[in-house]
Amino acid sequence: MNDFCPIKRFDHLEFYVGNARQAAQFYSKFFGFNNIAYRGLETGSREIASYVMQQGDICFVFSAALLPEHPILQSVYKHGDGVAIIALEVPDAVSAYKETTKRGAVGAIEPTEEEDGYGVLRYAAIHCYGDMLIKFVERNDYSGVFAPNFIPQHHSNNSNFTGLHTIDHVVGNVELGAMDKWVQFFADTMGFSLLVHFDDQAISTEYSALMSKVMQDSTGKIKLPINEPAQGKRKSQIEEYLEYNNGPGVQHIACATNNIIETVSKLRKNDVEFLQVPKTYYENLEKRVKNINEPIEQLQELGILVDRDEDGYLLQIFTQPVQDRPTLFFEIIERHGAQGFGEGNFKSLFEAIEREQALRGNL
Image (cartoon, rainbow, N blue to C red; front, side, top):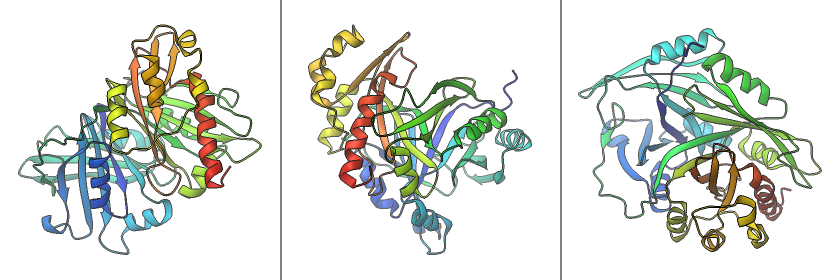
């Protein structure tokens, strides 16, 4: 099939937050990101302050409104701090916009050019689930640090660097009955295909369940799982998310590392909080996952989960929510051939999430 919307990579994720300066400091001190670019009052930006944070090939942009009527502030009021834009680098932003909108996507930002002394940056955007945007960014003719109207920040290398290098996948939560609609949206408008489907039998506990379908682009670099709640005895983690996010949005971001033991050790030293896994999880773990390179004792000490599929194995761990609302959290993942998402860990993971829900009075 002709790839009518080719994608190079995740360009960046833009977070709308209440205080961009403090958010940038949080991700610097806790997760090891470097501030590489900035816009704000000092650069002539009268309505928005933004900090561009980078680690490896991961780029996060934290933006806050400077005026009370600005849409960013309205978003934060409604959803809390969280991801508002998934930006994808494409070879041709105009073509990506035209091809997706003619196939049913709703345009949000028409093709736009911005220019400075480093060249021309082109971008456009379409609407996605909830209030999310998918933004197409074309950098062919731009060599600046991030975008026009941003100035470079020349900070020394962050001593808190934790070894995160790429975005593995970005997971969205949608309301009951909407998952298939958005699966079809990505297939029809962007040419994505279904990688794997997990039903409510695979992802369930005694109390709650969810369903998930993983969509990916033609290269397999861009993976966007979509979750919806399933019927259960009590409120599921997806329902809790939808309640506090006031609708669909990004639930978690999976960041890859080449050494999860080292990365998680540094993150814990930086006071990042993770979900607690019961010690019983590690009983007979070696028999379940067979040969792995990492010592089981270290994995247990750090709370790292392991799963194996026909292609290899993976290691993963999940943070607590990174803001007061129980919405956005992070996954740290290291792959050794495995292409899955830790299906063998689903039950242990969701029981851990439910324990946290119960502490919040939301189970």
